[in-house]
Length: 309
Picture 1 (cartoon, rainbow, N blue to C red):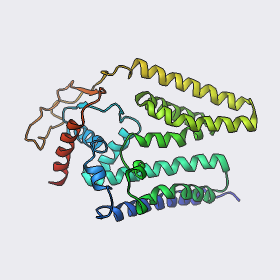
Picture 2: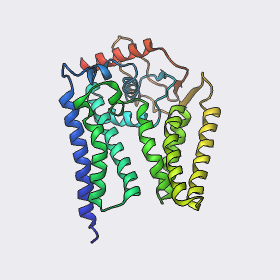
Picture 3: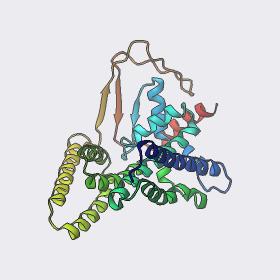
Picture 4: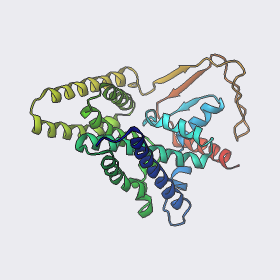
């Protein structure tokens, strides 16, 4: 018997609500506990890695001059869009920003696991959602048992999250019969891999396993050849983007935005240094030549003071 659309929507909404609610409860239960080794306060608030994207989002939405110099592990996709959304949802609150990032990350991982396991095992909708929840639950409850940073990468706004997510999305996209889904995932993988080669390196082993299992089942079928061709084109795109766009160690990406004159006001930073408002054709400049941790800490202290004063 086929489930009605309303019933299916209720199942899906309920499953995501449980995942989000449980993640929030675990995060808040561990926050500030004296026995929590380094999470979430010192792991996020005092981290020169995890605080970067909050500061970047703060500068974007407050109209500050974006004279940013990122580390070699560039936080572009999907981490940068996630952090921009988290900043908006949290209202720019420094502490709640990290909570929202954790909720978004776990929600995306749950959705990716649901998609992949459904393609592999099928089943009714309740079975699919229950299977995905069982698979993602260890990631949710890790902080209850151990707060070492190795168990918490997927909850933080770091470049590691993109590796985890694409490690699940790539096999699912290649197994999916929907071309638009394959195209979107491969395009995102190309962008993420071109910016940070670690994304490509960490996701290729999973693809190799999938290809090997498919070969054992189907030999040189049309589907396997098509999958190999798509990954080959995507890898070529990663290489071209890396060499032509991101290959130079001192490369600077400049985005020119037309800003209505006087539409954005520029507040003063906590160092009492006022930044001039952007001009109607101001340039946003991002350097990928590896800035020092000292500059990160300076920005982090600025954001910390603004968040808690």
